[in-house]
Amino acid sequence: MFGLMAAVLLAGAAQLPPPSSPPTPPRAATPRYAAPPRTGTAVIRGRIIERDTDIPVVRLPVKLFRVGWMRPYEAQTDEQGRFVFTRLAAGQYRVSAEPARNRASHLPKWFIEQPAEPGGPAKPIELADGEVREGVDIALARLVVINGRVLDEHGDPLADIRVQAEPLSEGPGLRTSRSRTTDDRGVFRLFGLAAGRCRVCAEPDNSFDERTVEAFVRTCYPGTLTEEDSPAVTVTAGESAELDIRLLRTRVFTVSGTVLDVSGAPAEGVTANLTRIQKNGASGRSLQLDGAGRFTVRGLAPGEYAVHAQVGGLRSDDREQRVAYMPFTLASDIEGLVLTLGTPARVAGRLTFEDGPPQRLSLTIGVVDAPQIYGRPGGSRRNTQVREDLTFELNDLYGQQVLFVEGLPREWVVGSVRYRNENITGLPAEFKSSSDPQDLQIVLTSRVASVVARVVDDGGKPSKDGRVMMFPVDPRQWVASQGVVHHGNPQKDGSINVGPVRPGEYFIVAAGPEVFILHSRPVAPGGAGQSRRADHAQ
Image (cartoon, rainbow, N blue to C red; front, side):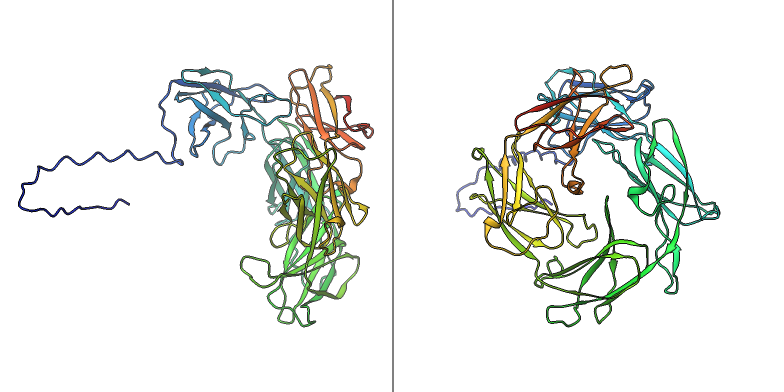
């Protein structure tokens, strides 16, 4: 909005000079959220093809982002899959290609400049005035489809069952998840999935009648109660999978309990969740408490669960935070669980360095639930900044937690984590309140190990799409979002450098476009400062 300003001049009888022309107002700056003006002479040209067939992708939107601006330029590929951006000013740019809205044909992808250092971060296109940049080519992965039916134990179709495909093939740009509901024929169609390995599970509505003792429960393909027992479904580009899922009917159970405050009275204004815990993570639902703090949940399949309750500590609740957390195994009806709200643990700790700390250090200590409690209020991951004296304090701790460090300089890793003289490196632990930083010691080290590997095809040639991942042999360290999986991408000579990592025993996985192959034995890098070489056929 522009305002109007007026000046009043008081003068005597002297004659005033004629008024001068008003000054020209300055030109308003182009807002950052608008498309940047085209004022240069540079050009970017490229081509979009399918990754596995080299077939051009036609009429595909391509976006060009100038670094520092929010809105992109837009173009569309022609019949040969080619695109061009002209009249560009010198600067830094990023290019992305993705299907138009309401299309599910290919996985979106950014153009990646080869980093200057192996394993370095992706960098934008550096464009000089008048430069014509050719070869900005992107190979898109075609999305795949999984068709199938959900049936009962007699082979009859089941309608209104939600079916979800959860990818197991993780990597840059490779993670997609889809869910659909079966029709009256029990048929589902999951589209828009990345090629690779995934787990497919069917889940009925869990609102059961209180008299129900048996019911359909969440079942993973082809008919298992637990995700870890379900075989992975592999779908390659250009193909579709056909699956039948036999929904299991099993005895279901009821859990009831009460949430009390610190005085032993029924708690008021409580946010509560019930979580089912599995090896691959956790899924939760909110609990409804009555005026006496009681809750009842019916129709639960056997398994591992936890109840979490909280008051305060939220933006909408300024009361002092109180929490309660109770894990349990469900193999029969459980009545009379009692959760008493208490103050979460607050733990002090200290960082130490082997061989002294590096310069310009800015570190963060992160905490993640083990397993992640997705239904937990406020999220399941919390961070705290390390002070200049290398001490820190962790708040809101209860249940099993895993610690990790973010912001480490390259070639530095967490060497060990000790809590009250116990080694908990990479392992979940339950913490008690303490103000002594000596109780929790995190040692950082630059004495690291790495692995140099090659992924080759059946003919022994380096795979252009091959990747390598490495993770600890100890399954207790496989905690969601802990960052225990180390990735490596191939260089021009086909070699892949994975690291740095803490010396120890690891599994190595070769990852192609669609499949993962587990190395037949653990790989121990041997010792600090050493590298291990491994060749693997894809």
